[in-house]
Structures are given as structure tokens and as C-alpha cells.
Length: 560
Image (tube, rainbow, N blue to C red; front, side, top):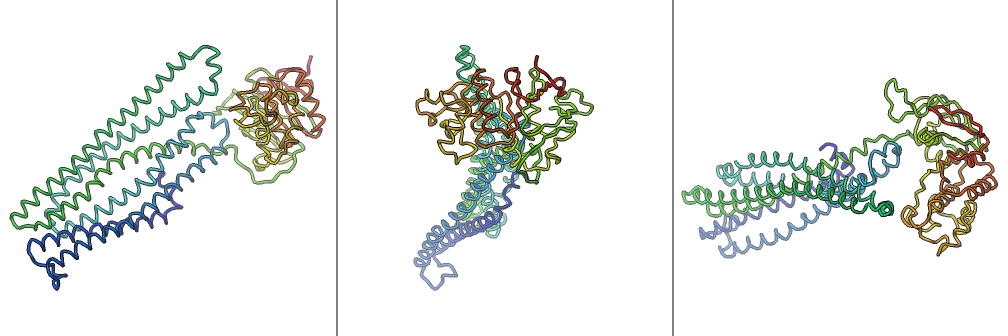
């Protein structure tokens, strides 16, 4: 609960103002039954109340009736304002929480973030945050309202008839225990539902981008059966939770109805024996009716609170991912040399770990060089590139840039200078031009065409219906693999990096086109350093130095 409330500190003034309106609303609400009691007792005794003794009975009752109507109307003002403050604050808290998560995710290493599927993260950013927002808004509002109303009604009832008040409030502790016991089951059920929803969403999110693969292998039946299994599990978990809530809410209604009957029965008995007046019974019935909705809402509050607690726990799992690597403070404008000083890295680091992906690498690269890194699959080539621009940090040793530890530099400035180009390009459901402009929005169409020309994409544009304004679809689904890789390369070149880390990023391009692209890069970007991972000798021959990664070691290599 402390964790859930910690994100509301900046809005405490708004919530305090909302509490003031809640108090004012309930103060007006308490006055109305007391006036009703006075009116009924005056009518039955055929005498005006003492504070209206100088008026006739009929006129006194008319004054009380008008007063009740005016108070009921005035009560709407604080009721509106308490919702206007607390509910709006909850929406702002929802926005801020979603923004904090998004900003935090951007700072987390892809290696750490890979433990969460896209669907899992999406559920936390949508369903889980919505559940937390319901707690920040309606739950807090209704809880404050219920607490203040219970206190105010209890005091007012006790001042009117202490004995009758104690009798009527006796069931409340038992009701509170019942609510507590059921709330535990609701929390467990809510957590299970959210986990199953994450699995279902992750499955659906993974299916649509790869639909062509499923169809190519004729696996539609398997896909449907898998969908049915996950869908049925999700349905079963929702129904299980719904059954708990369906049992819970009627019990609350039954309890409040029982208290109303108890009021009429015991109050009537007291009235017959002269213990209370008929007006007092009417006042107590109104009070009990005022408590009916809060007691019914208590069940809903418990249900939503437990869902919010379960959701907040899932959201906190994202916040628990520490920003990695740590961002430095130093500014950087140029990089001439990159040196690896006895660098070692392992993805699962333990004491006495011997299975290092990168082990004791000592090497220095200079700008203007073209470096090729070769090695068998799984030898750590991509990990090696990650170390150069601090997507990850070494567990031993350090990466030195122009004589300074790379950890001291700002990541925001370092990564555009030493730019990583992944093996699998990510294109957005937009035009080719806008995909190229992704990193640099001010590019003109002429500049986009120039970059695409460097990447040997000009002839491809002639075959596309709208040229650079052709929409490529989500992840470039409407174009070939080689075309996607060349568009991604043009997007990288738009930043004008000083170093380009190419992670086998032209593997789908034919050898002749690849040769032309490298020639264009050397001609147009003669001062750019290139470190490229490849399995092909036709690519490696463009490098001034070639290395082979084997058993974590970076070994100089020569082509046969």
C-alpha cells in the first residue's frame, strides 16, 4: 500500500482540498436527517420546534421542508468539487506513472528488458496502470467519503440515542472481518488474471507480425488450438474471480438490509415503550440508508484495491530493472580512438564464472579504420559491438574512449557518435522517407534520396508505386529483407555517425549491391570508422584489419 501511495506525493494538496469538500458534503448530509426528525416530532406533537416557536406549526414545518430542499441542492456543490479535484488528480497521476515507466524503460539495457515480452509490457502500461488509476481516483474518493460519513453518522446517532446506536453498529466489526477475508482471495485472483492476460496478449502480439510464417508452414490449426487454450484459461480465471465477487457483493447488500430491518424493529419497540420518538426512528432509517451505499461500495473498494495492489506489484517489477549501463555526465563531440582494456563479459555472472562470452580482450581501434569481426554463430560478435557503444558494460576491465573511461560520457551524446546498426532492421508503418527521417526529422526529400542512393536503393524506388512516399507496413512487411536493411542503413547514415557498428546488417543484400554500398560509404564518408560483424569473406575483405572471436578472445585473422 505504501508503494501504491508513493506516486501521489506531488498531488497531496489537491487530495487535501478534495477531503475538505468531502467533509463539507457529509456535514450538509448529516443536517438533513436531524431536520427531518424535528419536523416529524413537531407534526406528531402538534407544536413547532423551540427554535421556531414564534411561528405557527404549519409555517415552521414549511420552513424546515424548504431548508431540507436548499441543503440538498447546496450539497451538490461540494459533491461536484470533491470529484473534480480527486478524480482529475488520479488522471494526472495515471499520466505521470505511465510517463515514468516509459522513461525508465528507455534507460534499461535491452539485455535486461528482454526478460519481458512486448505483450507483457503493454499489459502493464495499459491494464495495470488503469487498475492503479481506479485506486487513485474512485477508491480513494469513496474510502475518504465512507470513513468521514461513518464517523459523522455514528456521532450524530450516538448523540440522538446511544443505546440504539450501539445495537445497530454491533454487526459492523463482523462485516469488516468478512470483507478482509474475501479481499485476500480477490487479490490472489486478480494477480492470476493479470498474469494470464499478459500471456494471452504476448501470444497475440507475437502471432500477427509472423502470420506469413504460420501460413507458409500450414500451421493455422495449431495456431487456433493454441489460441483456444490461452483464451479458455483467461476466461476460466476471469470467471473464477467473478464468482468470488458475485458471492461477495450480495452478502454486503444482505448485511445492510438486515441493519435496516433491525433499525425498524428495535426502533419501533423503543418508540412503543417511550425510549425514542417516531422522528428519531425516521432519522435513524435515513442514517442507515446513508450507510447502505458505503457498505455496498466497501465490497467494490476492496475488490478494486486488491486489483490495484496486484497491478502495482507488476508495475514495480519494471521499476526494479535498474538503469544499465549508468549514464555519465561528461560531454563528448568526437571520438578518435576506442580501446578495450582487458574487457570481459558474461550474461550470467556468478563467482568463479568461467564461461565468458568476451574474455580479457585488449585491443585499440582508430577512427578511419574499417574493422571486420568474424566468428562462428554464438561466439559473442554482437555482444562485442554492444560493448563499444555501451549498450552493455563489461563486468571486468573497461572501454576507454580517447583516454577516458566510456562510463563517464553521456549516453545521449555517445551513442549517435558510435552508432549501432542491428542485424534485424525495425521499420515503422510509415513511408520510406519518414523511416529515413526517424532520427533526423529535418531531412528534405532530396537529402533522403541522396542517402538512399548511397545505399543503392534508387532503382528499387523506381519500382515502388509512390517512390519514397511508399508505405512499407509494420516492420517493413511490404518490402523485401534486403530493402529493409538498406532503408535502415540510410536512416543510420542520416545521423552522420563518426563510427558505425554494422551487425551483419547487409546479410540479405546480394554481393554485387553490397560491394557498391561499401564503395559508396568509403567515398561519401571517408572519415567514418566502421566495425562490422560478418560471416562472409566478401564483406571482410573491405576491412583494413580482420579479427576472429573464438572462446571469448579477439584474435587477428587473415583471409585465405
